[in-house]
Image (cartoon, rainbow, N blue to C red; front, top):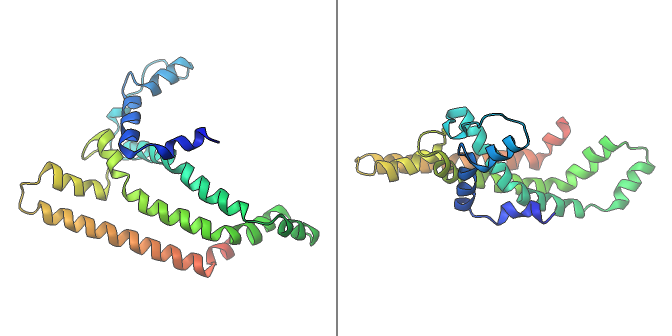
Length: 193
């Protein structure tokens, strides 16, 4: 359990450095895969672009944030009284029915919290993407903000474009959070299951 919490304690900069070192041709990922006999020649991870680079960043981000989501959901699971499940079994409910009608509704606040925190945190993943692959390899909206502020700051419209991207990103996160909040408040996602 303790080992699975380690990624949560590492800063995004350290995560980017750790994975960038691993993604090199002679990095630790290729060394492990070749040492286990899963590959004969090293894979060139750093040549990934667009969708391949996006999948790599998603995997890195998943490794980083899984512990925090796990803590939130396990705290929610600890709040479920075992008497509720025992009563459901007594009245003839099967495991799926108990999960759908007891576990999920009780976990709803924990699920909402973790999803909203992940939406907010997902906006910050651009830093890892830029540090691992550089500008322009991964199609992130927020990466464009850094591009216009850091790479081409001298162009008269770069600050305006960076502000526009920042504002657009904020609106998108706000709207997705509100839609998710309304849907989960009504409970329609539970009834659809």
